[in-house]
Image 1 (cartoon, one colour):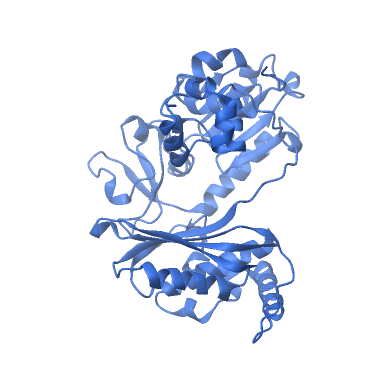
Image 2 (image 1 turned 30 degrees about the vertical axis):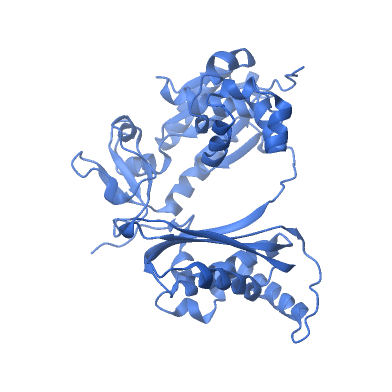
Length: 422
């Protein structure tokens, strides 16, 4: 018997085409009437398109494509990313939210999307939740000039689903989904990847089991889902019924399966990819040490240039004992690279570490003191944490093909300030 325990008043508010809308506002343009695209860098045709304004989307322009894929004959304004500015806008939005809810009832999901639990404060501002949603959206527009949309539901899941699947399409930008709407509004959704939390790999697995609509998941045997997918299958079953008992502000344990790092390169690399590989392993090691973790399984993925048809390889190796030392992770990556690389130009590299366990004293080696290396690694992490990642770099990062210095000037992988053009 399904239990619908959660019955809060939750909003999920999205800033529409956030980066693009910020650029429109700074140019004195209406984000809802202007064709504008934000590109990682206008200097590189292969750069990622980070955001497009709502009118671009209505005109069939796709986001998350490459700069060279954007139509150049539709009057679109192309703007280079400047992440510091977008963060300033985001901070203004957070201050607006805190006028309506205390900080423990606010969950910032991403730079452009937040959850607000207005159950306890709604009566102070409006007679119903849709009225309050409009009030907050109007406040955002007045203070920043940015358009927003709001999904509303009795829990975080339905608020998010109503935002993604209805609110952005409605003229007023607001949608409310309750449990009684699940069968008519949630179940028909297809493809499955249109639902929050279902990625391409999971969608393929579910398709292979005969599920193509959310309703198919809701009517599937939950025991069989659990047997096939584990706890994810059971959670998916309940989500397909609109059930989500997570609460804003409630601490919860995150089960880490692996840590990873990836980079799309500025140019083609060959054997010299080892420079970037070492830089990435260095950063990955710092990340897992910050979490006091170690891992045994090292995974290396190499993506070849699109100019030669793409492709690549993805392989892993399991070590004899867990580690969080840079040199040991790098040796594993180099082993995989030497074994599977076929000499083609490389444009993407990803490295991850799995089979995690808690950090513990490293077993002494016959010829080297691994505990000493670990203490040195933590000391280096402390310096970088205090003075910035670029304060302490390996010598390879100062070579022509090193990327750490350039990447240290980025936020979220993109330029913090407006890039210079001749």
